[in-house]
Length: 103
Image 1 (cartoon, rainbow, N blue to C red):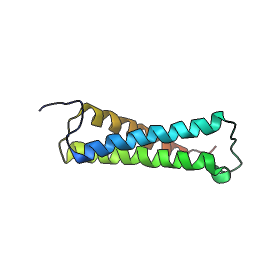
Image 2: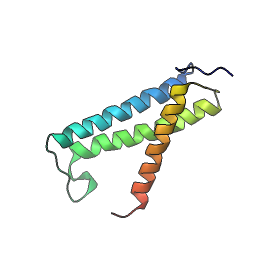
Image 3: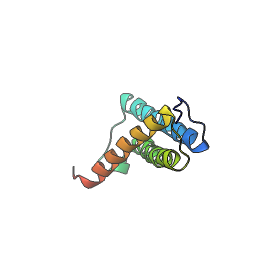
Image 4: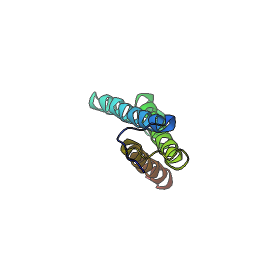
């Protein structure tokens, strides 16, 4: 078993690309927050804050799913694929916790 830094499979590359999109979407969210945007009573009260968070959540979850499929099915053993899958797992758990817990 040869472990590499970068993935050689298409799905492994997609997993890394999606986790990069996750960080970009979260960066856009924080730029809006730092510029003075405020939330409202509901999640969708301010679309400038809601849309980047939804994109970040979707790309994080997809990165996890595609990374796991790449690791299991394609036997991708790249370090970045494992890291993107781990970050995607944390995002998935965060989204589940946000849905379950009442604020």
